[in-house]
Length: 199
Image 1 (tube, one colour):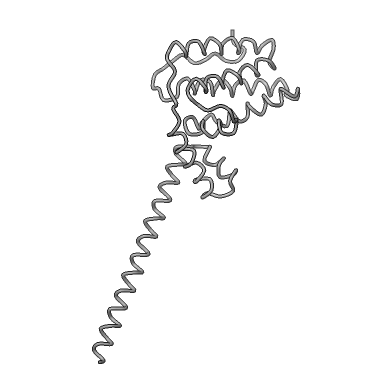
Image 2 (cartoon, one colour):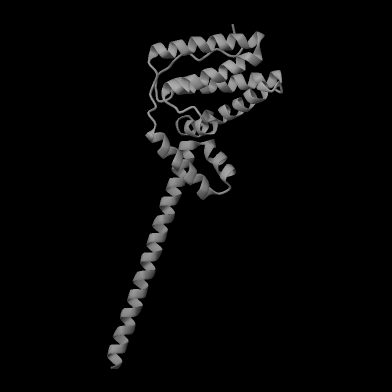
């Protein structure tokens, strides 16, 4: 009887050790996967990762949100613009930018409209500004904050509350977004857009 008890105790100890080892291994693996996913999101979203953390108040919520954005973006039918369409939009942009010198307020309104039109032409849903920004954060995360800031200025401009410096900064932000939208996903060199107010 004593041998049977000892065998049962030994089996129980081995089983407990095996369960403990398995739990430890799975926990370590899950932690490693979570860290890899976190690093992947940080790399993919850049400064937008920190913005999401600040907006959502925790790493887990921010990472869930960024993952949802990625999955939503994959379902969108985003396309590259044909060269002729790019040239047309570029000419429109140059007109808007030249107008900024004499009429900064209306030029900002036009810049906002033109950026929205480019997004629509590429296949972005454009009905909701916050959703537009979230969608952009997947493809061009480096300029989505520019878009947020420019949109805020455009809104203040509509109320007559934006200073000339605010408008100038908004135009710089819109230009960065406009260029990123035209060049996203492509690996070729194009001449940079002219600076605001350049002739």
